[in-house]
Image 1 (tube, one colour):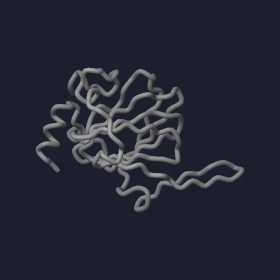
Image 2 (cartoon, rainbow, N blue to C red):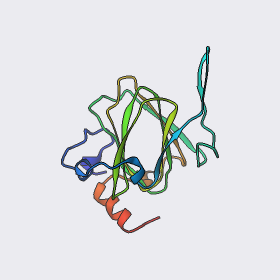
Image 3 (cartoon, helix red, strand yellow):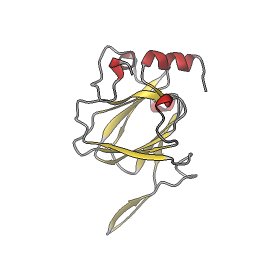
Image 4 (cartoon, rainbow, N blue to C red):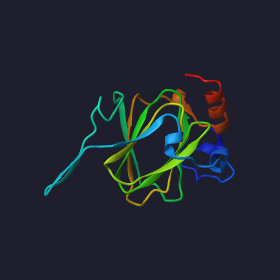
Length: 163
């Protein structure tokens, strides 16, 4: 893991991913926002995520990130093969996605909207509110060999067109 890309490091303004301009999310290959079905009545709300409907992969791992200080960046990596489905079940945070050519930032701030992140996307999670809980549904168990923590290595991986 490169020193500039530790999972809990503040985002440094001189890194390549911090300098490149932002584009609309639709210009970043391999990600999509998903509006989740919500059912609300006087008892409260229920939000649904179903495999084969909102979710295009089988869930193999579930984890959540919480208690992140506002100045801390999480993620700062890409996956070779893993799909992730990200939901702000409480509070809010921003996710920056980068496909090696275009990058965009989206704010997740309600449990009825998710972000599907396919493999080969660099991700950065920032701006966590004090009550933020980031739920991640993943397509595979944890595999340290699936991670690209160095941005230059990620760029080379994308340029090489590796599957």
